[in-house]
Image (cartoon, rainbow, N blue to C red):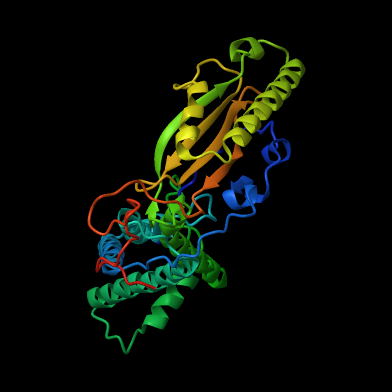
Length: 364
């Protein structure tokens, strides 16, 4: 019996009051790189290390644990992957997929492996294989309990019945609905795709994290600064809606221009001077400000490569919170000398050696 959960209708999302890319003048994706600021700077050409044994073991472990857990739950009469949200979103399959694919993401983050697009595609394929593995284990359990030989009831017959005899039953419904028939194949396809997407999602999140290609390490949060508008939200909120809208548009335009000036002032500065520029920003999140721009400085744990992200937080005319990304400055894509190092392998200039193959990764 298939089940799905119904969510209450959420409140209407807050409208944004700022087209950040238009007003901030950012390029596509809102990211500047050092090679864009200085045409004489070449982007690095470094082959990244590939996921090694430990990364794969982490992924295989969570996949096996998920398959066993779902099989055990299925045997107890609960088909988690059949849970749907609003009758269309395969929430259960996505949740199970997230659990299955989490190991690859955790392993790649812990061991600082930058996942490629090919790896993400393989994760999607692995999710589909895991889906059929779960279904096959459930099938063997069904025929085992019914004492039916596999020759009399094949796996294909089981999958056909799963689709054509699929029914929906809401939380407050006492009896299930009518079998879906041929439409059941569409929902089974949604379940399979939901599982595969869920399995790929954790790795997709990790792959989007900022990465130092020179040191082959993920960046860590280093400093945060805030630029606030002088106007107070308590004062702006008291205005009439039309006046509030006009005031907020003016406030966001002004503070966005100020953020743009700060971004350009540090765009070509080294890390030390970029850090010094944060002294002109507030160290803690301002309260009761009508608009705030947060500057998050992320840094490589081994060298001075860094990444500056800018984010606007303000309010809409309907008094709902409104946010927008104001872009970023990427200073990780140029080769920089590492900090002075006197350890084994350091050269005459005090630069640490490049990353080596430590046995956990296969050099590409």
